[in-house]
Image 1 (tube, rainbow, N blue to C red):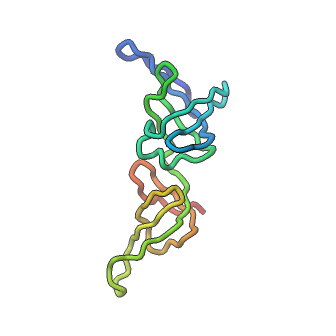
Image 2 (image 1 turned 135 degrees about the vertical axis):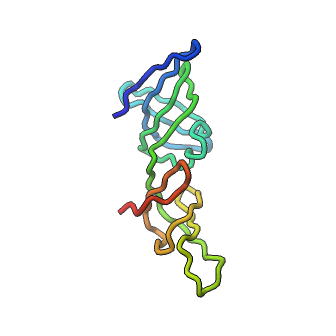
Image 3 (image 1 turned 30 degrees about the vertical axis):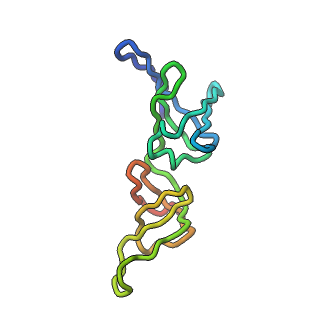
Length: 135
């Protein structure tokens, strides 16, 4: 369970709070705090490259200063669906162990060659690595 916390460093109060992602639009995430119903608009770049994995209903954590998000994080395991699988560049006699797959969020990752289009998988958003099948 995540507990909201306030840190004091070098004269600055930084607050850690959990939010739920309502939706994303363009380069902005719209989030809500479940106890106070406080809503924020947060630039996706606050989450770094993990911002591409934000999904409706996902729990996120923000570090806030004076009501503004300084940084954000998402869960270390995110479910995504494979939309396309890229053909291997090697010859037809060599079966690749991994191949590139385009996910429903537009991110391309390496997945085992036995996976097919439409399968739901878990990805680590910190390094875009395949974790396993979601079902």
